[in-house]
Length: 112
Length: 111
Image (tube, rainbow over all chains, first blue to last red):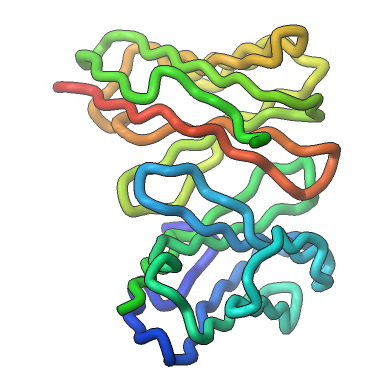
């Protein structure tokens, strides 16, 4: 069991759909991350929230919209995605920038 | 690209043997971390080594860091079938929250 919980585990959506990925942690961590991972590739950073404020946006297309409602929750809103957006989306959290990151098991996203 | 390189890309060994994987990176770092990822799962943190440290141990894991060569190695001793996974190094970029993951080593331990 991981300490970072991601829902749903699997998601299939059409290119015109709107959906959201959710991530929750109760470790009191102040930094939360979204990563995208393609098969047999390393995770690629998308967004970082620090103290509930967006700290890093790695030039991610606007069809991905992050939200941090409070210190325990992180959402990723999806709209008008492309087939190449199909991937494993990982959420992580850490106490601060020099501490290890704790990862959830990810949401496997398929765009039809 | 700032991405680190890991070698080998894939490694297959017998149970009980040692496994060594290497990571090279391009920029100055504050720390380097190693993670393991089992198929279809999230990453699990293994060990963190700071830039002023040269070697660190944790159980069957030994990590070295050579900042002059911008490289690190992860040694897993007495490997087990359960060690079968992908292993990634990750380096921080300019003291920010951004960590760059290496290309990864896929380890298979045969029983």
